[in-house]
Length: 113
Image (cartoon, rainbow, N blue to C red; front, side, top):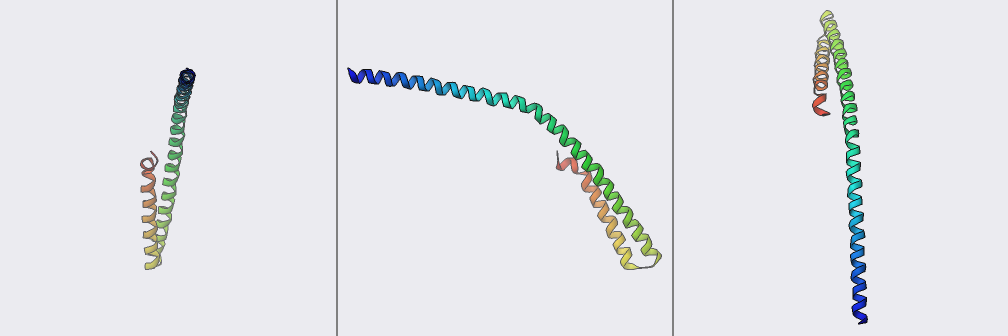
């Protein structure tokens, strides 16, 4: 008889333990869902912030590329004035480098989307 009572107590304890464990899991699941819902607003805010930052990067890098192209054009023009082949070559290279910077800046939305 003692063995039966011990077994029943163990079963009751096991059921109680199982209930507590399931209650903890349900609480954890509810907490995770609550955090996910709360974070969804943060994600939208982060997307807006990231969009603003990528817009600034695109604008200023495009302007920087334009300045580089402008300097390259001046170098190229001065190379023609002094009939210096090396300076003409550097001017063309600088113009191309500025164009590449502008092209990469135009793709900023592709990189950071």
